[in-house]
Picture 1 (cartoon, rainbow, N blue to C red):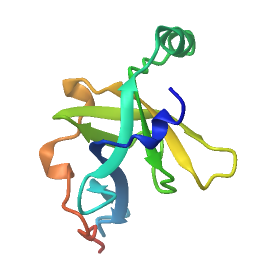
Picture 2: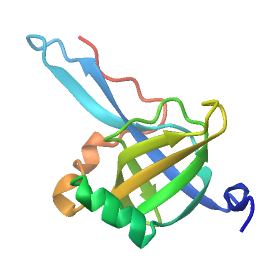
Picture 3: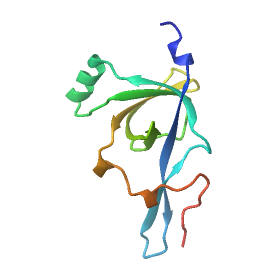
Picture 4: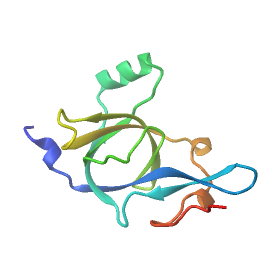
Length: 130
């Protein structure tokens, strides 16, 4: 299907890990803050068998990919909430000019891979400093 990635008819939320000084002897408090106030429009589908085999050969388990408009803040290890399931970003690919779509490959986070609920902070929440 030509231009299938322009069909951004799904919504997902990306949670980025942020850190701040706690003032307790140099330790850092961390949490996950959404990149936007609302969920972001995206295109998503399960990865093909070919991509799964390649990722398994590299020791990863990529199960789905998302296509967002360019998000400079997303990083490997961040989380995506999509249809009440948590995914962890394993790989990021951008278009040639780094200003178009960003392809984000993810693995389904198991129960042990998801941080506790108190680590997910509302949009715009400042991280505790000192």
